Length: 129
Image 1: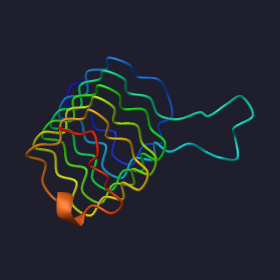
Image 2: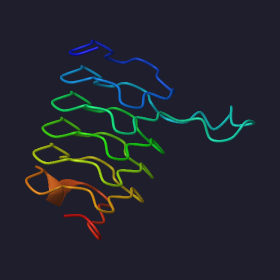
Image 3: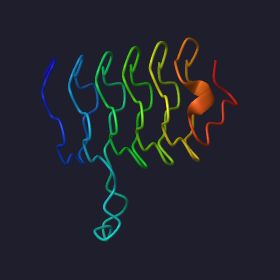
Image 4: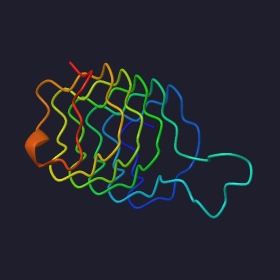
């Protein structure tokens, strides 16, 4: 789904190894619905997916699993990243200006060269490289 247009979509699913290079996910709601959690935390999962160059501006990614995901050059400006799991992810050159990264886990993530680090709320760069 290279360059797929999923702007504003509601997406809570497992998309491991998905090829979403350059996809438009601006304003997409990929956040867990806390009213529907009887079977465990249901959230957007993109482990080892390719989201390089994707537009995730203003997307809701609270609690999302993005381990080892390629987000290089992605636009995450203004995104809601509360408690998102970016362990080992590549965010080199990504734009996180104004994103809410409160309690997000960036352990061993590559954030060198990311834009907007100083304006991202709640960003804890411990363990990132």
